[in-house]
Image (cartoon, rainbow, N blue to C red; front, side):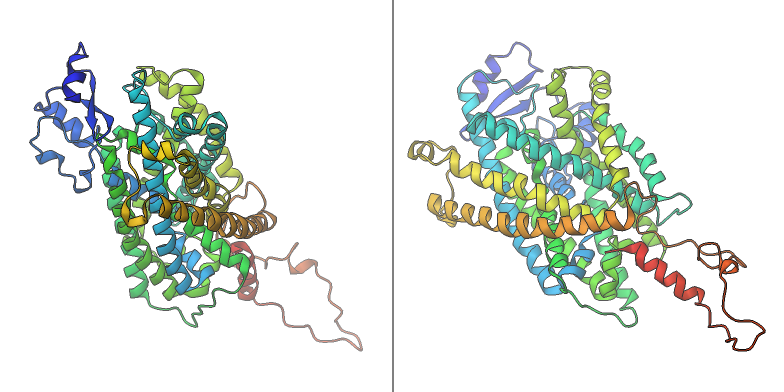
Length: 540
């Protein structure tokens, strides 16, 4: 048995051992799991099992501790970044297109996650067969898979896209934190809240790896589930606003901006390889991801459709759906839960960046948690800075989706799979050949070609044009380093002058006590002025 051979090769029984699973090997952890300390660690901290979705580790009686949470990881990673902006996307796409795009991109995202898992298994098997690889203290990442299978040029391209995507994914979480907390406490502007949450999120440098996200992932699943169903139920109870309109789609730029935001929704597997490496049985990842996608659809479809039904075109000027719902204890609870969840998702997105940085400076194998945490801090600084420069919550989602997710999550995995298995020898020796359900190798190549063509033309091409047009419009309207993006104007105190430069006292009117004088025209009502100001403050 492979496990017996591995056991015999290790001097220390408590050291990690390699265990054969199928035709490749995975990492295991030996030792006594019956102690209270090991059980508590397995429950809250250290993990790797595919069954943690049911959080049943506390009652598991097997010899080794039950491990962590790929299902929870993937649900959190998929839905966290865009749950609050999907109603905004529906207002751009219309109800029918919004639902169809979610189903279509959900299926496409599951397919490319499958491709990434196959490539990971292939790479790891080849390394294990060489008898030179030791992954006990090394986390495999996507760029290393590309390097091992296709060479350094693919590695560099994959590294550039993946790191940039994760960088802006972390930026989005900081923006979302500031945007959400503002709806509970507007005494501070959103930029100030970004400073505060940037410091809070920097504490993720102390979380070593994805093995240690068990309790956070479970909490994240609970939080997103509550928030999604709160949005749906609260919108239905609120009912449609007076004169509600559902005009979308009205403009191509808005249509493709909304479509790329949904592309982003199901393109959250930039950390797929790291999560698979954290699993004790990574061959189960494919089914786990599909289940996670199906569960995410039960959250995103009802919430987005309900909010859009209730508020319609008002969402075009409110990229955060929470802004339209009345303040209640339930809404405040949703805001608080999303704040915690976005902190968790910040850690999900940043952890691969921490790994890359550690490998670059030679500290990835360091055993000192404090040294690694101190070394990771420079990664947080540019994220913090970019969140302050570009606080455009909805538009930045679409821009990242079209320019980065399209390549990182869809095009590169599909091309890499086709090139890796282009020869007959590679296909014959493949660790996991394609199933009959998709037509074996011929069907796989047809599907991969369609994915590349569709995402390149629709996602990157039209989506990139639309997203960048909208993004530039936000900069032109609000400027960089805007203090409070999409904030309502403050109420005027009693007796204050109307919002004209210098007030009405400086305006000279051609009337008075002389012949030919004209009566004064009615001054603009304050309500009209405030309405006009609000229109420009929200933008698109």
